[in-house]
Length: 64
Image 1 (cartoon, rainbow, N blue to C red):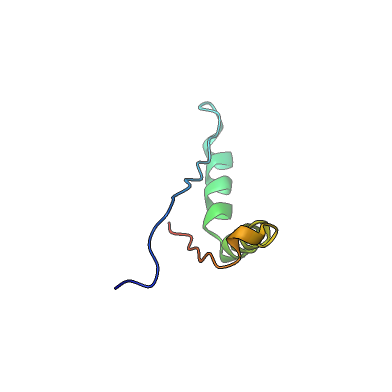
Image 2 (tube, helix red, strand yellow; image 1 turned 45 degrees about the horizontal axis):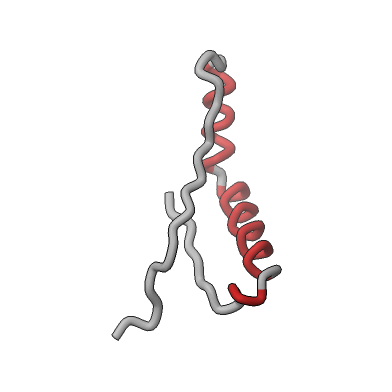
C-alpha cells in the first residue's frame, strides 16, 4: 500500500503581456529556469506550508 497519495495539485502560471519584446520574454524565461529561482520558489512554498499546522506532514514537489 502506498505511503503517500496525491491529494491536490496547484498549478503556477506565469503570464506576460502578448506585446512584450522578445528580449524581455527571453530574460523572464531565463530567470524562471535558473536554479536560484527554483530553489527560492521551493523555499517559499515550504515556508507557507510550515505556517499551517494541519500541513505539517505534507510533502510537496515542484515539477517543470
